[in-house]
Amino acid sequence: MKTSRPIRARINPAAFRRNYLLAKRLAPGTKAWAVVKANAYGHGLWRMAEAVREVADGFAVLEVETAAALREAGYQQPILMLEGFFSPRDLAMIEALHITTAVHCQEQLDAVLKHGKPLPGGVYLKMNTGMNRLGFTAKDFSVALAALQQVPGLSITLMNHFAEADGERGIGEQLDRFKAMSGNWTGPVSLANSAAVLRHPTAHGAWIRPGIMLYGASPFADQTAEALNLEPVMSLESRIIAVQDVPAGERVGYGGTFTAEGPTRIGIVACGYADGYPRSAPNGTPLAVHGQRTGLVGRVSMDMLACDLTHIPEAGIGSPVTLWGKGPAGEVSADEVATAAGTISYELFCAVAPRVPVEVVADGGF
Ligand SMILES: *Cc1c(COP(=O)(O)O)cnc(C)c1O
Image (cartoon, rainbow, N blue to C red):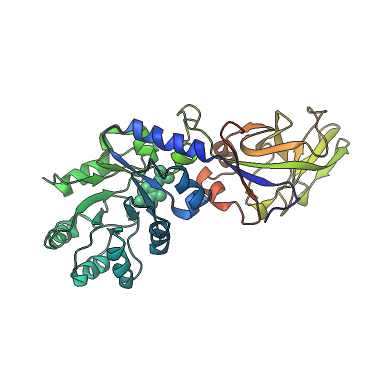
């Protein structure tokens, strides 16, 4: 619903397309799943899918219903269900619509074997090399692989997911285990999330699985999206709806967690945790107002938050505010906001609330 309340999520599909093409350039010779699970990380599945319709090698999703909806809309690329099916009943649809399904546990394996008919989309056999979330460990993997190899005409890709591709420990241990488990496997493998695409070129495999980088955020704590040449796709925008001139010693907001040290000009922004802005964001969390950066003041309320306008005298009621992204009020990366709030950009994007109207922006128009 369009509202006259000024908050907006502005989405630039062209930036998503460029980020996807960058991921492809970073992994030459591989194909790239555009990971569009979770409503395309909160950006809107259809907007993002449409943006890469002509260039995407495939789409990675969670639900069979999402896969089916993409087929229904005429997408002919491979579609991967990252966690496989949640009910064996889904196999009929997976077969009919040429969907590729992960197989991560014995129950899924049994269902595929029992299904009997070949699955034209093939399977991704998921290996647990140390993430300890989904997949077959060394103990059960070769039996699982051998069983799938008995299904005539079934194409198999080995799949691994890195737990620390963005961190100091990196991928070494998991990659060693992957190699030990896969032995003399010469078929396709799919290993890399965004962090591995960007930092671990030895682990690109045949199909990369970039997610967060497509949305213009960095998977790393120590490298910005800008330094990685990624463009923000979403900006969260609003406006100042009230201004308070408070004398020294006054507190601001619930719990009085901010006390003015001197005379302070406070701007009230139409954005709160019910819009998806993190309530955990502390004093000083960056935002931009009227072309200048400033900091959050006091606790985030349900529908409002406060910021310091003392050094931005030209800002007043109606001034544009960029909570994150690149907008008319300035630029603040979602990663900076996420770090300040003790979370990651993924969570900020996914948390943008349904009540926030979305505006699709033309390329170049922020
Ligand atoms: C979400 C997901 C990805 C994408 O991860 P990013 O860190 O966003 O790049 C890749 N692989 C699997 C299995 C996933 O679930």
